[in-house]
Image (cartoon, helix red, strand yellow):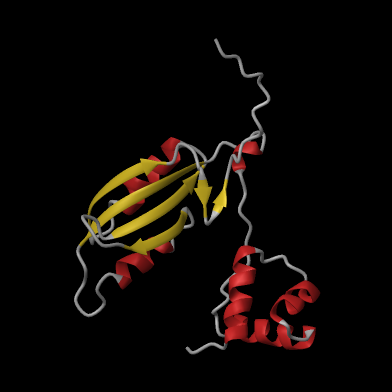
Length: 166
């Protein structure tokens, strides 16, 4: 789909900040508010804008003990549908947050979130690895997020210690 320069500008701006007010957004792209709203609505209807979201640092939320795992999956593609059918079977599980077709040693990369390591392990052993096309999996638990979707976590506070030199 060929987009205009204004449409591309709007997409780039809201990708960085989906909560920007329409009056600010319209000024940034030099369109009226009604033109801006119309373009956004069209982009939503065409599913170019799929969803608006937030990036959350869950480590800062008390009593939240979730875990995220990236699982490399080697599969046997099926005739006529390739990897699409197995990817569809995998992304339907509620635990699965993302599925990507990859190049390299593994075919799919699956991001899974759970309440505990054992919950993710059970997902892999009872649901994912039992699918017909799945040959093997390798699970990597995310220990700490430094940057996610372009957002840097833990930018750190200024070091206020006094410098001591010999």
